[in-house]
Amino acid sequence: MESREEIELRTLSREVAALENDISPDGVTPQQRRRVYNALQQSHLPKMDESGVVNYDHDRGVIETTNATAEATVVLEVVVGEGITWSSYYMLLGGLCVALSSAVALGVYPFVLFGMAPTAVVCSLLVLGSGLVHAWQSEEIDLGYS
Figure (cartoon, helix red, strand yellow):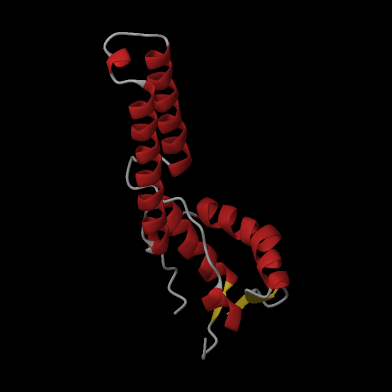
């Protein structure tokens, strides 16, 4: 990163609260902003400062980007609208595969017609496909520090 950017903690907390609540920054309530402000001030920013991802001046309440900011990888679970998290999706997929495999193993009609090997292949392909989509979506996330 060639240029360093600064942002005040108060401004950052309002912007993060707006993103978390899917509203404009002007619509953020004092309670929403305060909750994010406290989490950033007490936990997240000191850890990010310690690891060199940002420079956090606690006394001034200012966060400055560093060379490492652009290199930092951020992992987010994206929930679109009323969607489910990836962790919930994987649990549901795992449950479906266990139920399907159990039905085949117990000889439940019509699942017994599939056979165990094809069932294992289908479940494996579902997990592989889901992982590829998850990885692709994770690569699309950009927090704007470019």
